[in-house]
Amino acid sequence: MKRKTNKIINSEKLNNPGRRTALKVGLASIPVGVSVAGISPWSLARAGTITSPPTTPFLESMPIIPELPLRTLSDPAFIQPPTEAPNRAINPSTGIPYEGRGEPHQFRSMNPPQYFFAQRYGPVPAASIHPNLQPQINFWGANRGGSDLTVDKPMTPTPTIVTRYQAGQNTACVVRRFNDLPTGAASGGFGKNQISIHLHNFHSGPESDGGPCDPSLGGLSESPATQGRFFFPGQYYDYYYNMKRAGFTNPATPDGDIRETLGTLWYHDHREGHTAENVYKGIAGFHIVFNEYDTGNENTGFRLPSYPEYDIPIIFTDLLIDPNTGQASFDLFDTDGHLGDKYLVNGKVQPFFNVSKRRYRMRLLDMGPSRFYQLFLTNPDNPAQSIPFWRIGNDGNLMAAPKQVNSVKLAVAERADVIFDFNKMTAPGGPAPGATRLWLENRLIQTSGKGPDNKLDNPAIPQNVLVEFRIGEVVPDASVDPATIANFAPITLPPIEAPIVTRTFNFNRSGGQWTVNNLPINCDEIRFTAQRNTTEKWIFSNSSGGWSHPIHNHFVEGRIVSRNGIPTPTNSEEFGRKDVVWLGENETVEYIVKVTDYRGVYPMHCHNVVHEDHAMMLLFAVQDVGDTNPAP
Ligand SMILES: [Cu+2]
Image (cartoon, rainbow, N blue to C red; front, side, top):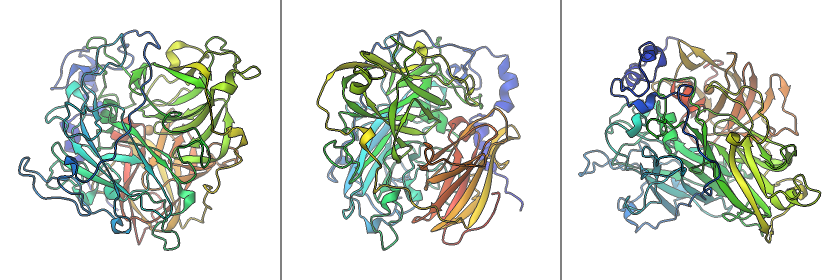
């Protein structure tokens, strides 16, 4: 079958050049700091050509990310009431539709929204990320929903959203997101003020998924009159989350299948072609879902450490600071991937964090853009110690049972829920007796955006540290020791059903671009259609040497059933549900998914967001009738 040429994507890319191939010859002779073609010199600084200014670690405390408050419908944010159909009436003060959404909320009448949140996306006021660095003036973020950005200021990471599954109850919510980003070119030379906010791994209808684009909703059109997926300055977009597990349309399970329970999610911009820039600018935050068993209260259910005191979301990225400007720089022309040399952790460079001698749940998230991590706890005063801890979650899921580990590996977008028991670790007979501080450090060496070097650095090198935990006194702890948790039943693994279709996806490089089966994203093309309520086997393959790709598909998570022909061992951290697959060089992974409930268009892509933007992504659909295309 002949494939359509995508004229839109080509002109889009030329208007905001992201192609290294087209321009690298010309750029090579241009010194850093000289503006070309209207592109800020900041955006030209590249890892290897500059080094961030020196910083002294552990000068400031790691911030706790604030929670997004609930609002009532009488709040000014809801002067235009939330509606099932998108509000496409023209706002007389902007001349464009009030709402950017292009489709109605699916299945909303089954669970009408009960809880309402608002957020306004805008520029973050000059933000101190470290006392040795200049305040950052090019960050974007979201506020806590107030209508006055000078009072309720946008922040990054964006506020944590907390919602809940509750069987037998309707806990559905709407998150109204306003785009208050500035019009015109983005400050700093990178970023696109048209946004689409994806709730990573939630079982959402396509209209609330925050996808990159959709052929039926304007493809890549930049006209607010036709575009229905990303929304523009002056518009809002209502995201509806029914807070039901997958399977809720099955009359036998109106609350969904409890085995499909999700917990540690995150949300971020997903605008086609500009995701890396917008996430690097700061549009990323946590969305945590509690439930009847993982309650957020250490006195009930599984008795995991209580939120928010002892359940700490931690999001990290790596920044490159241009010493000439003092600002975070992003190289639009390096499509290998972006690497920084400063770890930014909850918005601060290499902070410390005061903890007590008790158990903490920490939710670790690699927000990219391109770095892979292998995280260890290290006693800087005795680096030879090996300090095990407990992993209880992988991506959005509790694992089958807690697992004691010495490290966790994270590709971009992957999460790990861990339990650090600072009392037991530092007690006599523990792995770090008497330790007064521990470092959370990344020992995985990575020297280019292509992927990690598959080598570990030595322990206790200060620049590898994300955060220093400073250990205080013993305090009461009602949580249970993970060693005593045999499993997380009834949240267990669903059975793997026989696939009706097998499809192969080769993540490779073709024509100077990142591709899936040799094709870059085309926002006007759906590459395959899965049949609703059936199971498929997807084979992810990476035959291009030297590259690693974290593969993510929206809408449904899956099970990694084999890696390089070897069935996933039951004691593997990968033995469970996953929404990101770390696809290393020359690897092949078999992944099983079952698509349920919603109909519509979703993407599959590499979550090295630079690869994603250039353009390792495809669109697929879920409908009542599917196809059997084996190599979409
Ligand atoms: Cu990739």
